[in-house]
Amino acid sequence: MLGLECDHTMKQKSTKSKLKQESAKKLSELAVTVVSKLPKRSLNVTYAELIWQDRFEEWASETADVTVEGMKYDWFYKPEYSQNREQYEVRCIDSTHLLTRTRSKVCKGGIEGLTNESWLKVALSGKTLLTPAMVREIIDPMSVSMAITHFSEQVETAMRATGDIAGADLCRDIRLWWESEDSPGINSNERHNRRLNLRRRLLNDVKFSEFPPKTMYVKGWPYQLWEALLASIDAKVSLYAFSHGGSYNVRAFSSMIGETFFSELTMNDRSGQGTVSCQEFGQFIGNTIEQIQVRLDPLRTFSYRTKRATVYNLVDETNEIEDSHSNCRLCTEGKGKLPPNIVFADHHFDASTRRRLPGRQKSGTILTDRNSLLKGSLGVRWERARCDQSKLLPTVKMGIDND
Image (cartoon, rainbow, N blue to C red; front, side):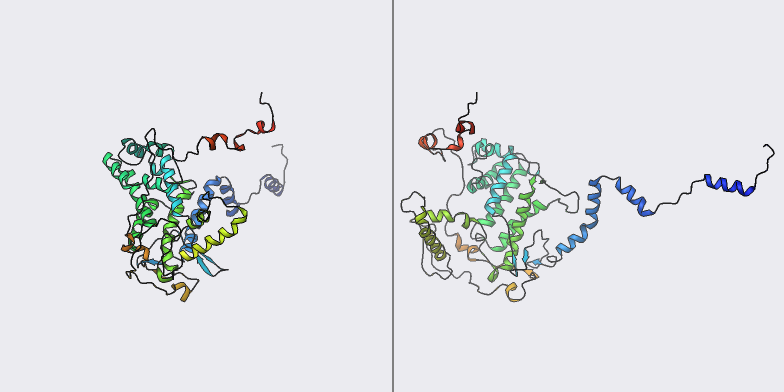
């Protein structure tokens, strides 16, 4: 503009120096920038869905081809194989505990959207052994007899009469499952079918490929209880492959013998107080172990009882079910692989002749009469005069004035 001439190359250099030289970022860097802005919950769900299928196929590869009576079975539980002991080890929670825990949860409400109102209606009607206190207060929560009353056929019938079909169906499924775990004279195939009703209920509309997974409740069932029931049902099926002769007594797979061991021990106390001193403890333990061994001896040829009153009447020997002394397939063919097909076989406990006695009345209830016997009462002397320092406040024990 001033008439000065400028070199053309100098103009180009100055123009290039003013422009910023930018290079495109790598795709990996752009991806990291975008992913870092996502919530961690979404990332966890995406990653879980990505690896789910491979992990599931790896887990199910051992049991995918194992059928039950020639039919495909979608296993929820598989037994753990111990490398040290070279054997499969089946573990599950005792059925009595599962029954009482189910009753406690039903009394509180929440399972599959059900409340305890259905049971309260039946209890208030007075037509069954169920009482309002058993539902509202969950009296004696560890009592099996109370739980049997809660899911009894009489309660189911009363519910259907009032139109509570959902609650009645739950009573039916729980009762049939418990009968398969405890009742004698039911063949092995029928036991399996009775368990399947509850199994289908627990697995209905449950998708394991959805994330995040259920952590506390599955359709209102506490997760631990829901999982334990399914594992127990599948464990009872797999035991037919692990038992010699292909059959077993369903009551034998229980922790009750360990829990009632000390009640067996106190039966040796001649004073009748049920207390054992240190001096007598060794002798009592020896007597109790010997009695249990004799009572459970399969080769015993004489009748044997440890109490004055008999539980079952004596019957003639029956050959309805022959004893099988053959080893299981895992012992003869291979210890590290499950059999391709699990076949049910009846035990003596499953024979129809095992129903020779109707059994004791196992249903529990609470007497509603005002002057009825108060079960569990310890008496005035026990409650008032016995020393119980757990009821003392720490300040009282230490002599500190609360004022």
